[in-house]
Length: 61
Image (tube, rainbow, N blue to C red; front, side):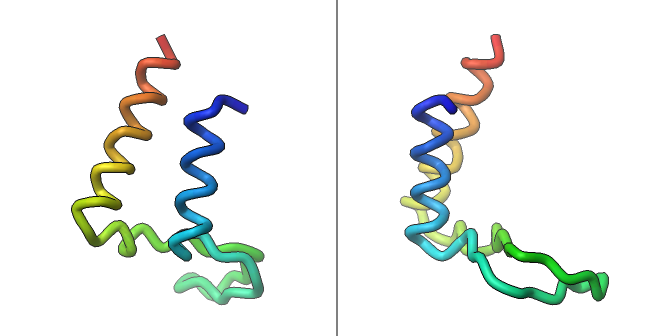
């Protein structure tokens, strides 16, 4: 795993954007995790998201 990927995972877990547990999705399916992208709701969080995407694009070649 690349360092930018680890940083992203740590960030989303730290900010409760990625949660683990038992969740019922809108579709009715059960999931052991939930990624709430709506919590990228501040300049700091959006900036981190943009930097993460940029790092992934650069890494992809």
